[in-house]
Length: 158
Image 1: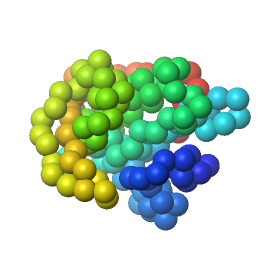
Image 2: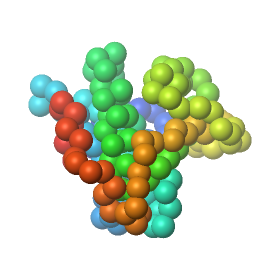
Image 3: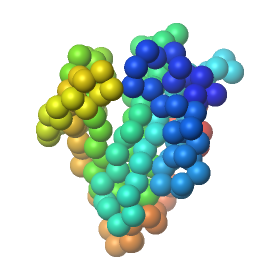
């Protein structure tokens, strides 16, 4: 299902092999939103052992489900997963011409920290954005630092 959603986009999509590898290695978490028995969107977050920085690798919303708050919900779920994983910051890359995504990230508190030349497969640059996440204390990276689990976002599953 994840690969089918990726195929709806002409460039910069994750292949079935890449998705399978991310899921098998265990250094990633995937949050999905399903509506009307359709995969309406997903978010993939990557983690590095010993790092307090997570990376939002992909956030995709099905074109038929845009402007319904799914991107905002998936971003919040990705942030919560990152905090649960012991991370204090979430970073991402976004195309400079993807204004709806940039607006979503800015509204959620992300700031542009860098510009990366020729980042995407078509040679387009990327903006790197990041956000400091909620307070965390004491537990080593990779273990939950929250006192109690956050409630699941409506429609989000792991």
